Length: 121
Ligand SMILES: [Cu+2]
Image 1 (tube, rainbow, N blue to C red):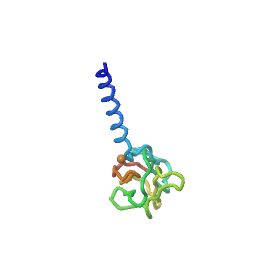
Image 2: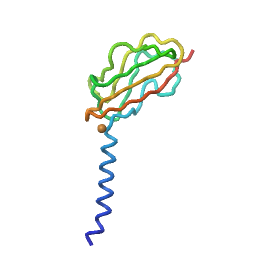
Image 3: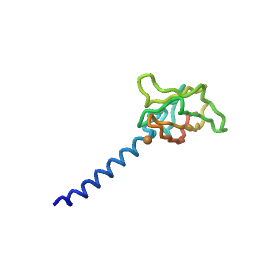
Image 4: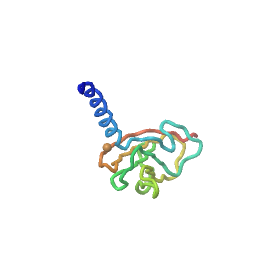
């Protein structure tokens, strides 16, 4: 009868490995939101990750349509929330911007991604 429990154990093992894979810091939400158009130019770009990140090994670069960096300073996590990484930006003229992020989660795994947003003319 014990062999009936083998498939259950296999399923549990699969669930465990899946939850480990999900421990990487993936983009959860961002401000401005990916692919959004905003009326007012933001003064900072913020990304909320699914896991805490190490700010000294994580970065956000914001580029304008010409590929010039418009972000200022270094990305930093919120004092009370290491899942929130943000960076300041200079005065953003209307146009499209690309956000390029690299994150190292607290479990040392690296993830990266890019997205765009538009400041409405
Ligand atoms: Cu991980």
